[in-house]
Image (cartoon, rainbow, N blue to C red; front, side):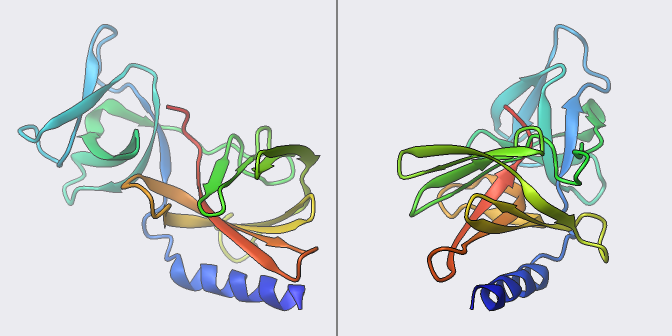
Length: 200
């Protein structure tokens, strides 16, 4: 029963994630001066409303770009914003020795839960005011796509992490990874949520 549910969730994830909007981790830099800030705007235009700013060295996630590549769409606070691409330096996504993404933090709503992968070897799981630390087991990156999906086990959950655009349904903030957790001790209860790498 549980294995069938895992296979179904895996198939749905691959079908619904085209990976066309892959998240890319960036650091604010480029042409930005040490004492300057990078403006975050509501639309991809210098005349658009300013909704905030970023300092040199801050880490952001890019989910989309304007057609000419001059503007990048980022996750900013609980929404999305646009910044000039000229002030971003791409960073390589880090992976632990077992193939898990480093620094990934996931969460889901109703019921509310959270999963932090920390060093990629261990995880912290939170649900219903309870927190548990446990090692990640049986981490298995997909072979047909370059780490586009990663299977894993933590506590009583069988997990599937997939790369692609995700919405938490509660805000306008974009995410770059989707996660599904199947509780193998409760007849296949599935928890779904979104994940982020950047620490803003």
